[in-house]
Image 1 (cartoon, rainbow, N blue to C red):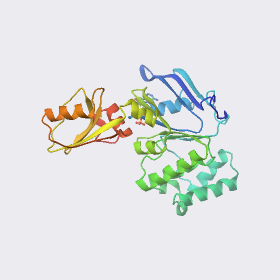
Image 2: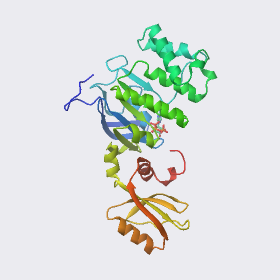
Image 3: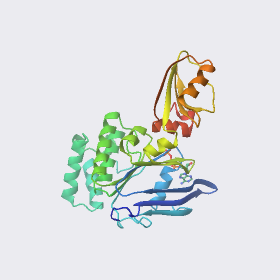
Length: 312
Ligand SMILES: Nc1ncnc2c1ncn2[C@@H]1O[C@H](COP(=O)(O)OP(=O)(O)OP(=O)(O)O)[C@@H](O)[C@H]1O
């Protein structure tokens, strides 16, 4: 792997990536880098092209055009960087016992049999599945199966961990556990690329992010950079009644209902100007506070109100 340092090549380099399926272009002009050692959030609404990009990066899809490099070259399995990939579509041998499956994959990844076995037993203990070690996978719940799959993904101590929605379907306690495990890999020096729809995970773990919309980059940088690109602040408003806020050139409404609203200011939309406009429009404002815009609010602003009510 390339050594660290100011002039170091990025571990992952994507430049002008384009992907067509038949007549449909699903990714265009996509460029971003992931530096060695960082945790990178790959964000975007459903169907925006995240999984397609990861598949092209790993050579599963042939890109229509552009550069997709890991450590300075197109990825070849078994060649250089130690990779752990958790694909979006999960799938292990469901009729085999959990421990046997883990040991099998451990051996494929170059671990000795006893090393793979002891690692797997310790992992199963940690994720509270020790009592399932001899059960076949199809007897486990889907969240439990996902824990096994994450174990298989990280058991070769990857230098580059690519996780496509690692906590999908987990309850909050298990999500926290999984985040802790990913954070340990990050602290151990691994580079992590993570697709997730959980913005609090991104704020907790990610050094930088790219936000995809319709196959192209909508925002790219540190979480703070992206917050700044979207005005940096959000106004939280409470008011009597449940009326719809007037549209305005001074702000975008990212959420409203039940006498509360969140507004992201546009240029010229300072607190005083926005408040004056709302009051002039007859809105009985009872509270108005300013805070840093969250990634979730940015996400809603980018992808539209239709996502606000449901899971994106
Ligand atoms: N093999 C394929 N053939 C044709 N279209 C495809 C293929 N794979 C993906 N697509 C299309 O490419 C677009 C992007 O899909 P992709 O799975 O990359 O989105 P995503 O951002 O990962 O979405 P999600 O958050 O829902 O997982 C979608 O419109 C999808 O239908």
